[in-house]
Image (tube, rainbow, N blue to C red):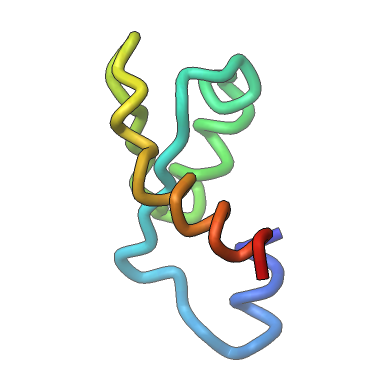
Length: 66
């Protein structure tokens, strides 16, 4: 969705970074090929480290509270 939305808005994908947990859908070959084909850098949090996503979860919690 990000790729389509950014292109529709006229924005480029330059230096776009996709950070995810180690979920199966994010580690699949098709997903990696899609990111690589659009020159998007993929990063994955370290295994067993719940603090990798702490800032995003904190923000989401505040957003949902509002």
